[in-house]
Length: 86
DNA sequence: CTAATGACCATTA
DNA sequence: ATAATGGCCATTA
Image 1: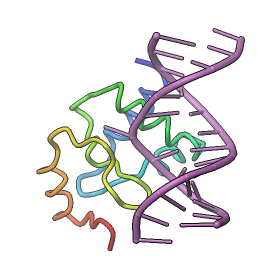
Image 2 (image 1 turned 180 degrees about the vertical axis):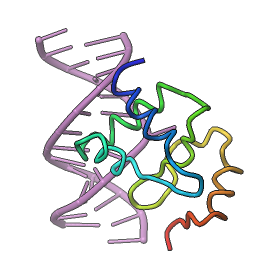
Image 3 (image 1 turned 45 degrees about the vertical axis):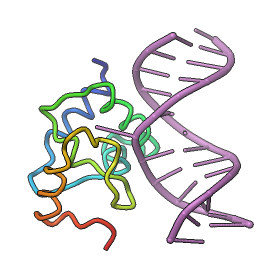
Image 4 (image 1 turned 60 degrees about the vertical axis):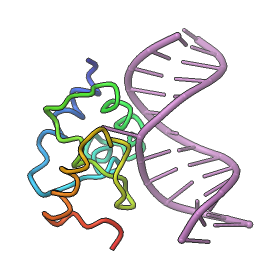
């Protein structure tokens, strides 16, 4: 567990229900927009189910690679209002 | 230390 | 619309 991961973990776990953030947004919150890649990497390594990784999407609105079984959750999110590619 | 990888992003063709 | 390219960052080998 690294500092960067902790930050990502914190931010991602603070994502409100029905709200989604893109890696770029999280990276921006971290201070640098370019951290998007590292953010994804952190989540990948972290592999925590306590954090709603499914609420983290790409900047173009598409779901990321967190397709581990969150399909239903992703669908639920969609119902919430997370429209993909309007 | 260097090099390589990745759940990315924006630009360009 | 898709495909390819360059760029940045953190982690790992």
